[in-house]
Length: 284
Image (cartoon, rainbow, N blue to C red; front, side):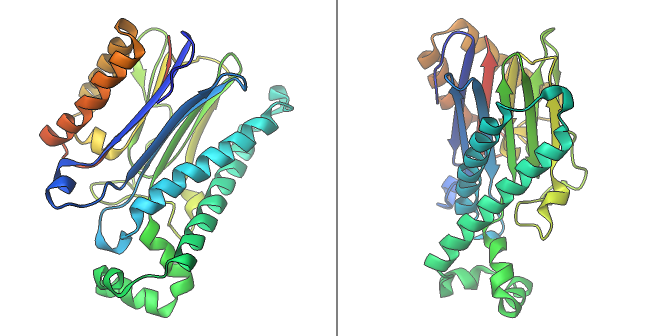
């Protein structure tokens, strides 16, 4: 978590799901948020590692996704200092950023795989199909074990804000008039337990993004699908985030964060029972 000045607050929370606790399964989510006051921008990141047995290192994949994204965003934002937004091709620049994130992530998981080859116990977790694919082309297929989704939002106040997304989970924003909306288009290929992923053969084809130089939101949230699945519909999800905003507006930051952080495990217990992660940026 991170407390900045009164204008921008960033925070994150990541908890093991109730069903994972029951079977002593490691949390497969990772999250991060910060406001770099001197550099003038805030970011929030959530990555959700896949749950099935073929993705047996997805917890590591999610952690490396967050690390890779932080690194790529920081370099991207440094480059943006000298960019003329009037002639800025946001699709081209964000595509380059996505390429850099994927490259950094794949380099990181490859190093992990080289340092820690799959054990017999891990291979035993694979489905028959997965094992055959791994035996046929281990140097390519190994990346599946680290499969994870990714959502990131960045706000550079009074200049621009943007978001990137691959996989499920949702990015939720609140406009100045108090209305909630989803700034990044939904991917219809994400349904039930099926999702696009960083470990896909062509992940760059599956990224979605948005970029804006106006209509700055008063709040931005990124949440894993363990959050979404706690609610029957988007309106109920928006109600949850409205309550989070109210809590931070009406209370001291540490008190508000403690209340928010302690509520998420209970929400998992009574809702999705999945791992649950939220990153937020509030313009107070």
